Structure formats: structure tokens, C-alpha cells
Length: 379
Ligand SMILES: [Zn+2]
View 1: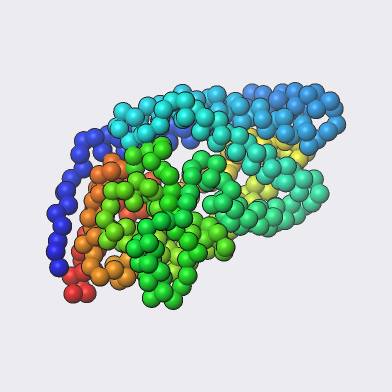
View 2: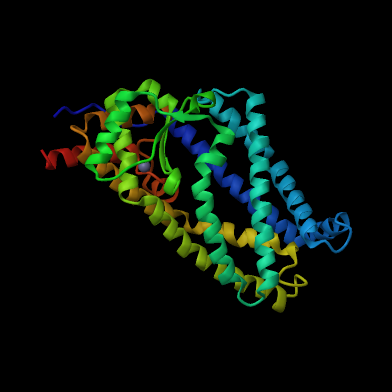
């Protein structure tokens, strides 16, 4: 077999870009948490709740909660606006973006509205359950949120993603035949492969397995289809098929379910403590406690990030091994990895600590080394 020369070290640009991205996400999280702490510590959350009830003319709880959510969302967005703009400029200064400021601003507005609708819906369901089931809301809430989560995962590729990107079935017949052969030899069926119009916004390339049941599909960025050989795209398809064959979406959802159960249990304790012991809120369903709920869940997810990323890297390695076994030679896998690293300005060799905390995928240098070791061992 042929070995493909891979660059051994990362360029200063790649290192700087990834360092800035990490700092950006850290500052973003800290700002979000700080806003919640300030709202709670100053009593402004209670003041916002009073404004919300006045706007809703008194006793209409559902409307008041909606007004409160809108105010909280606008506050959060205004506070994060500087960082959003910085991230837009960062992508441009490293020549990774194809998007003009206007189109970007429109996307920002759309994503603000989409997340507002989703969070308003979740908050209404949450407080409704807290009111109806004062003792057991955390178990009922967990079950209801899991059902919503499954529905969400199912409709995301057909309802949510198209708000931001265009999708169309893959037109390249040769590639479709290859995928059909790949999935037949795996004894499975993927419902479809779609071309994803990423190039409207970004110069980066990507691919993913998304959806559940009837919406399960592989999506391939048009940037990938344009710049990679059919053999390389087949290697990427084989990797995504590996996620499907090993049921990684289902397994991740089970993992989420276990973690969410612990999260709801923690929320129960925190809310009871805040209401009964500290008398910070009038009742458990006094929605001025929402910043406390956001604070607890965000802290929990930040703490669990290394664990979830570790689990994701495990799945990625499994999908890689599946890909090596399914394609005639690993060479296109390696060349595709190298192209991806270069095109996306990825860090091939981040420090071990950075990998452990931030990376959902094994670093590219490790993926290539593992492929070569596998090929050596398997002839
Ligand atoms: Zn993957």
C-alpha cells in the first residue's frame, strides 16, 4: 500500500485560529453564566418578572412567562453581540467564510428567532409541569423532555436545517451507487444522501449523519463534493455509514437521557433549596428562578463536556475503523483527512489537555496514524 505524506506539525495560523476559537467559546460561556448570576444576585430577575406580569395585565401566567423569556433572550443576545461579530470577523480574517455581513446578520436574526421559539416552548412545558405536579415534576418533566428531544431529532433535518441551508438529493449517480453498495454490504439501508449547500456561507467542508427513522440521512457539504475525489468522498460516506451501523445517534440519545435524569434530579434539589430554605422565590413555578435553572444546567453541561466529548471520540474511532474495513484501501481516507485539516484550518495535533476537554473528534494526526497502523496490521 502507499503511504501518503502528512504534514507533521500545525501551521502557526491553524494554532492561532483554534486558540482564538476556544477562547471565544470560553468567554461566551462565562458571559452567559455571569448574566444569570447578576440577574439572581441583584434581584433584577424578580423585577423582570414583575414587568412581565404588568405587560401581561396581571394574572395571565403563560403570556407573562413568554414576555419574560423574550426579555431574557434579548438581554442575552445584546450581551453576546460583540462576540458574535468577533466570530464573524475571525472566520473572514482566516479566509474561511463566504458570507457577507448582511447575509450573516439575517442568519443571526433567524437563529435568534428559532431559539426563542424553542426555548419559549420548553419553558412553558417546564413550568406547566412544575405547577401540575408539585412533587414529581422532575420525573414527569424528564420523561416529557425526552419525548420532545426525540421529536426534535427526527424533525431537525427536514424542518430546522432547511431554515439555514438548502438541501437536495445527491445527484452524482456514481457516488449514489457506491453508497448503495456500501450499505448493502453492511446489511443496512440509509434513506438518502443529500447535498448540503454549505458553500453559500463557508469555505469549510463537512459531512454528517442526521435524523431518526424516516428522516435518517447522510448530508455531504457541496464544498466536499466539489473538492474531493470520488474515492475520498466514498471514504467519508463509509465513515458516516459507520455511525449508522453502530447506532451512534441512538446511543448518544441514551447517554443524554441518563445525564438529563441526573440534571432534573439536581434541579429538583436546587429549586427546593432556593424556595423553601432561602425563600428566594415565591414558589417553584415563580419563573424569576429561570436564571437559576439555566445556571445549574449550563454548569452541569460544562462539567460533563469532557466526558461527552470522550464518548464522542470513542464513536468517531469506531466509525473510522468501519470505514477502513469497507473501502478497498485506506489511502483516500488519509488524503481526505489531510484535505479536511487544511481546508477547515483544523489543528492536527492539539495538546492532550485541549483534546480531552474540547475535541469531539480525535485529532487528525491520530486518525491518520491509527489508519496506517490498522492497514499495517491487516495487510
Ligand atoms: Zn464522524
